[in-house]
Image (cartoon, rainbow, N blue to C red; front, side, top):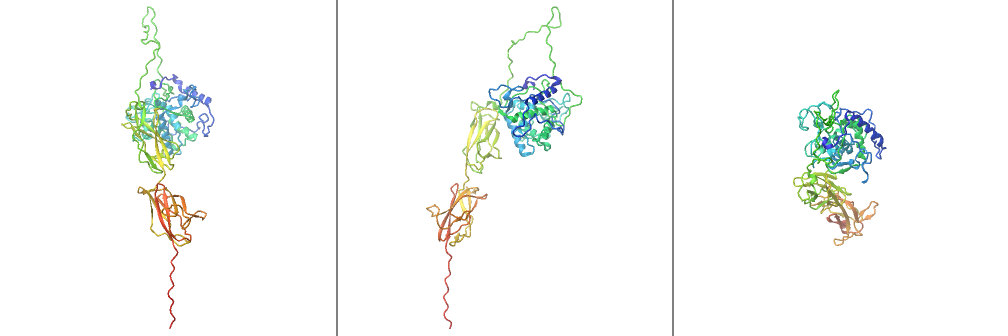
Length: 582
């Protein structure tokens, strides 16, 4: 573990105290005011006196990474150098897949537990402290770590004593448990807290999507509201029952709230220092309910080796050290890491996506397909492609999301979820990008047309007749369809026309009334209901008799002409008068 995370500061037994002093110093020097959203900042957010882990420590008070966030803004200008206490702008960069997992977990919890108010930045802060954002984002296309991230063996020697609970299934240790994965769950915790965050049907603590969602649910248990400082304190302390840990997580939480950006997978900044400062120590284990054995002490780091002693003339026992075989100043060759599939992607190509068109409110019949390729044009499997709907539109993917992430199959093709057209018509842009790889995106255009009907028919066949100056007894009702299906929400216009050859509005004969009771012979803004039905207002007749035409047209070209008759009532002729009686 030490090899991946670089040099570790040697602090020995005083590490915890040093970390506490460092956090306190940073809080004093970096204390911001209340931000414009009214949140308490970390400097002001003194843990509530009653805040404590209600069900034991989630990490068994195990070690964690103590690197502090930079003092400067997470969004400095490109010319700004590294900030004291950190590496400047790079500290706010979160590997793309890891960031996607945090945000997806927040979205899921917003629906599953809306009262929790979990911010993704809290998951990012804990992920930073627990595993350095999954070792700087060393994950594959599905979000699973390239190599397992294991905590120390919990054998009671400087750590909690937790004997094996999973027969080594997750941690490979059949004697004692070890924390596993980017959010550092031990197997016994994962048994009840584990979640499937990437929809592959598995609950894997080594997968950042699964682990982030599980951490979100863990922090949201007990009906905690994380927008309240007291509950936020309790949730963080339940992950590691340490005030120093709470203060550190709060610093990173506020730092990420000020700004964070996406960086390619595998390029995230790695932490250097840990609270136990043991050489070769692994990331913090997560041990809910565990306690550290009484009298146990942290494992000390290795003692420094004594230098060789030159041999005295005529003496014995020691020898003069041999000169190094490698000339001084020769840089050592760092170990090479094989590229991930994502590293080999050079560009994206359309994979046969046809023309994308749908009426407002309908699902698109075809889906977007994108192929990830190397520079030589070879397909790249197991790469995550993110599809994002951009621009001012209410069109979404099925399920209401405007972002979807899909892994490429063995042919290098990722197929986006079906698009669901909104009510806004026009062109919609869907952009495909590679998660964790800075290659140009690929834009797709989809067209949303207005709702339409291709056929209209009356729902009844009663004659439409009226006496001069009267009211038609029957109202006109029509049904609109499109390719045989109900055409709902279709705009329509009704006009009393002069003749079949002249569709302009007539100035005599039957008429409608507007809201003020005035005569109108053209109605616009009509719309079919959910069943495709359109019932026109009452019709009235003036004193003109004859046969008249009512024409109804819809978007899409459907039209129907209905005959109206205005005729005087027939009068009965008088019976012949009777002759004089005899």
